[in-house]
Structure formats: C-alpha cells, structure tokens
Length: 381
Image 1 (cartoon, rainbow, N blue to C red):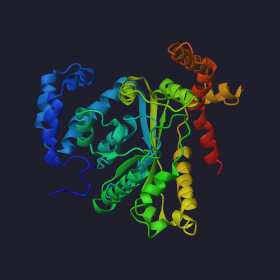
Image 2 (image 1 turned 90 degrees about the horizontal axis):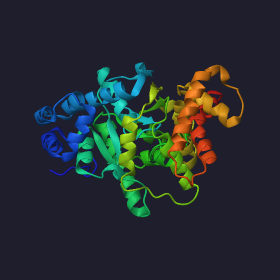
Image 3 (image 1 turned 120 degrees about the horizontal axis):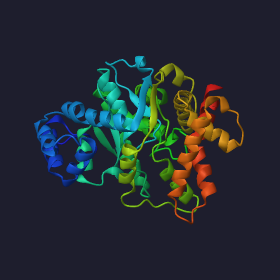
Image 4 (image 1 turned 60 degrees about the horizontal axis):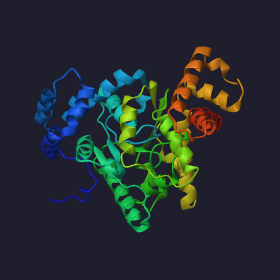
C-alpha cells in the first residue's frame, strides 16, 4: 500500500535487506570499507551487511562503528553537554547549526545511541542523492529527502509543504525525533543564523495557530563546535568565488566535501543541547504578523545556538588577527597561534595563482572569528 510520504521517507525495516544487498554489491563499497575498516576483510563486512534485518541493526552495528572510527581517526577529544534535558520518551525537532555535511547529524546519533535514546530521523538534501549507494546508505540510516530551493517556485512551495507535513507527522504522530539544519546547507562564513524560511516551512502544515504550529514540534536547539572547521579552505574559496558572480558547484563537489569532512583532522569537537523552546516563550509573539513571528522564532533559536558555542583558541586567535588587536590573548598560547597561522599558510599554498591571498585569509579568519562575536551578541541579551 502506497504511503503519502514514500517519495521522501527513510526505508522501513522490510526494505532494509534489499538495500544491504545493493550496498554490498556496489563497487564503491570496497573502497569505503577499506578506508574505514582496513583491518577487516571486505568479504566479512559484506556478510555482516547481508545479515542485518532492521534499520536499528544497521545503525548500531555499522553506522555507530563508522562514526566511532571517524572520531578515533580525526577528532582528538569529543564531548557533549546538556543532554540531561532529553526525555527519552519524547520526540524533539533538533534544530542545529550545520558545519559538516555528514558529521553534524552522524555524531548526534552516536550520542543518542550511547545514552539509550532512540535515534532521530535526519534531513537528506536531494543534491546529495547522486548515486545509488549514497541513497541506500542514507535511507537505511533514517535519512529523508529534502528538496533544495529551485527556480520553479510553485514546485518548491509544494515540496516545502510536503516536507512540513512529513516532519509534523514524524514528530507528533510517530513520536520520533528529527534532525534538521537551521538553514539551507552548511554555514560557510561562520555566522550561524536560522533562516526564517525554515520556520515558515515548519508552520505550513499547521496554519491555523502560529504558536501551536511551532510549540507542538518541541524544538530543541543543538550547537556543534569544531576546533578545526571542516572544509574551511573550500568554504573560503566558495565565498571568494561567490563575491565575483553566481557560484556553480562542480558535479562531484558535495561528495568531495563529504570525504574531506570525514578524513580531515577536526581537533576537539563539542555538542551542546539547549533547553527546548516552550509554548510560553512562543506566546509572547502570538500577536505578531506572520513574517515578524517567523523572525522572532528564528532569533530565539539563534540565541540558544550561539550562546552555547564552545569557543576554542582558534576562534580567539582568528578574532585578534582579524581585528589587529590582542584583546583575547589570554585565551591562547604562542604555540597555539603559531599552529593556527601554519594551518592558514598550508591552506593558502593550495590556492590557484590568480586568487587574492589577502582576501582568502580575511575570509578564513572570519569563518573562525565570527563565533566569538555571535556568542557575545546573544550572551549579552
């Protein structure tokens, strides 16, 4: 029997074995497996995949191991705080800042598994569904399809309404949590701000009551703080190119970003869970016109996310370098500053000759420094 959301939903348990079979037989699987589990024969991993019967088994026996291996190889210290706000019997809409295509949501799932809390469903950009193996791994890992904005506004409106209905259905009717980024795509410039259009999308499936439309989603803001920003030089180059005209992604750019995010050293990484947004907080905006209401809710989410940043020495170093001061010199050592400058220089050495090094450095510094200003703005309120 066809379900209203079959076009975007994750796989059911009944669909898992066929997905595992396709993954095991895909030539790319051997390449992925050899990187993540070099000590384990590919044939043994294929056999393990073919034995799995449920999404939960795939998440706990495969994806958790993958996330643990990435953490072990590329993260020097992983931590999280505020998890005591989570009630394992409730569903939450985890609205998060988005810095890495895969890891932001993947590491969250590991935290939930290790605390015996049901994992969430995860938004999955349609632009990432470029190959069968990516689709199968994603949909087997509770990921659901999200259309990106397009020039066909009518089509995008209906896709957004459909997405809104699915998110509300998952949270309210299925009592299952959902992870979604606060904006379309990753933050490139280090300024994590919630898109008012995302708030409006949430409301499209419940338009009779502004406060209820948001309150019943049980939004819980989540903040991830990376010591070394995933794909920092790629993000800087994209900003640089965008300043000079419309930016056109290469065909394999998203896949390269996924691989870079997985393999690059990220240093310390911290997740912070904030208090859920309450109906009482939302009630103060009840009389606002629609657009002003969306903005107010977005700012409320931003205040939670930005106030919860774990600031690292790199953030303070970048802020001082960008401002030409030593205002935060007490927050880092000379050795830490040298290490950061060497990182900048290594990144700059990979640039094409025609790129303006000074402008790229200014962009790179902003990617790290903006978290300091954002936290100061919202903590001061």
